[in-house]
Image (tube, rainbow over the protein chains, first blue to last red):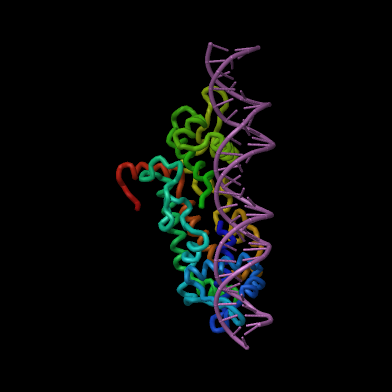
Length: 148
Length: 148
DNA sequence: GAGAAATCTATAAATTAAATAGAAATCTAT
DNA sequence: ATAGATTTCTATTTAATTTATAGATTTCTC
């Protein structure tokens, strides 16, 4: 399961992606609109900012805005910042690899091999989907184009 | 991330899948071989048994064996028993659906839509992979056929 | 300089995962 | 029948992680 942190992060990025040519959005506004605890969101936005996704400005008239184009922010990048690994087992992770505690022989582990395939399948979708795509999906859903 | 519970469950099923025509395996033997805490494994095997994957026999000469063919036990089934949902957000789950706490409008949620695609990609691999396949992968890896 | 807003660091609360414990039931073999 | 092996069941503890809160500080605008 995705952590709430990651879900909130994506929601915030989507909100900011819809706010492109407007003045920066304040934490409190995003928190209210998306029903996210404000202080928690504060931390999350800070992480996203430190990862280079957001631009922030303090003081009156300040707030957050995107530091990249919505097309350039991929779900896989966001998730790696907020949740860490994409793979379901540590030994199958590309960016957060570590050996399984109980592992006897990683090289011949069938579970690892299977979950490398799972990782690749997941990764494909997460790499193909940007914040712009998520916004596009919402637009489509609003005018009645359904995917489920 | 997969819980250790699920990883241990798959390991146990693989061990039992290699033990097909032999007498039942005892918990302690599986625990030792796979480096799994015995008492924890005990609970897991019980779950797998109650889910119909395993046959168990008490007393001397007792132990566990598979109750289905290794080809019939799919990773997706095991994971649903031990970890629950496959989807990364509850609102995208087929078997464990529930609404996200903070959700404003599920029908037009782009995050949900994207994670339905992720779910489908994951599901495809997990549905195509059985315990027999996992064992097959190990055999291939042992004789030098690599997939990474 | 006053007020608005982000920043930073720490900590508390809640939830979930992982592991342990021990008594009860069941089976085999003698 | 009984001894010993083994699973079964239920409860509890421990540990880890996630989620949320708190408050003092910095930076910015007007």
